[in-house]
Length: 204
Image (cartoon, rainbow, N blue to C red; front, side, top):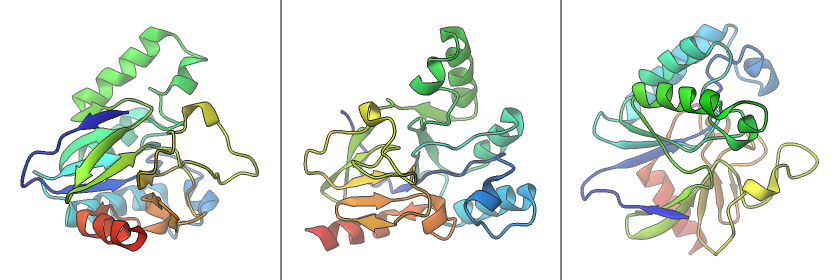
């Protein structure tokens, strides 16, 4: 995994599985929003209440779905210096690349970059927060929100690091060394640096 150095004094936040623009997501994940636009706007409001313009924000996959122009416009409104690790529903993922051309993937990568995102490796990264090294990936080490673990070839190798991840939606928030930072189990709000370090303290 590639290691990313956070500049001194910069705060970190992370989230996953927004599914901006996914019309069935309020129903599928039991989100309390009658309309898709209400979900999108509330996610932006909650994000910007805890993430400042100079914070580093990590979107751990499955951010933009549905109408890509509309969903990317929502993502562009999020505060912070933004990074994205592709998830299985991302138009820039290797799963999508099996069905589409390289030019298709490159086009959407450029769109994310134009919206202010740095696209990180799909296999994830490691990062130091408060003197603790974490792995970050869309995928948990093990487990899924389906009966079987999918796309095991894309999952990070478990080398003993605490892992920040998404993908599993409502299945769990913390399971051992795995912290699901997805919106569905974190009050539809990014997980802050303080919460991340509290999680690490609990498993040390």
